[in-house]
Length: 454
Image (spheres, helix red, strand yellow):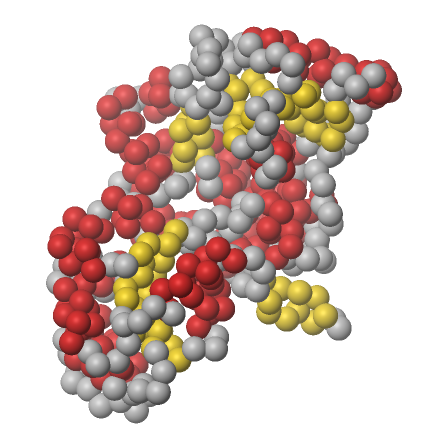
């Protein structure tokens, strides 16, 4: 769900997600009943997507709780009773399905069960009951099982459900929005705020809804992240508490990564944990899409590249462990604005650099066959792209610094180390380029760019 400014008010609107809506409509239009699983990280926009999909359809939604199976059925029954449906106090799921579907006869029903993993983890027979009801129901129903437990869906769901999982017609993963999509979805910010907000919130519409367009990033962080009454103040701790056990271990690893430990040995030396233990926990973090392992762009010769590095992939998690976690005492002792000045302000431009490189990769990658980065032992290329005609583009990027001829020389050096020849050379900066570099660009030796907001 996004917001649009109109006559001094914000109105809800929906932008993008064309492919996702097409996927859902495809199964809705099929004859008979179907089961779909829709999943993605918290805040990625699943709820908004399903609201858009169901807005002109007959639909019913239940949001599951984190509780025992018996309590779950009791809570569901209470909701039904409050809507005038007569049902037993602790009904079986098949009874719930029967009572709900009996209320709708005219058109196909869309039956959304949100955060369904809370049910499935406590009752492995849940899907069996749903499939059995679906196979005997006279009505056509599209069951949409929605969850933010993305790692569980991809790694444990089928094992939990067994053969009943074969009755799932399709799985839809709702992914983060790219920078360009976020700009369209949340109008009203200036260019600087878009880039800096993206460094904090990433492509999560649910988090962007908490930021105010009239404010710059500094004020939004102070009011909507650091203020104890704000939603985002507790957002991450709530998520971590629900999804992870042994939080002390995960916090230690993420804190190490946030301060620059991006190789297994680096994390080992900082934390003192064994490499085997770290590998297990990193695997779990990658399943939750909080951490990624980054490899160099696939080139024929990889002799001068690093084997791969670990990186916090969720920007909000990275922000938390870069600024809030290591400054816990200050966070409690200082007012939000004072904390920002003391712990964030001086190093925030440097923090934005990684997100800026990501935005540049997205912009170049939108018209490329493939895009990535090159991680050399002696230097890096922020962007490496193979165009559809087979030609190459390489780029380095700086959000907060004016670039000069030394940046051009470093770019050519890294391209040579990567054994990339005859590539288009690009430099990205939001501050600008000095006169000598502009002279080089005038000779078509390098392209000077900034993020395109049109």
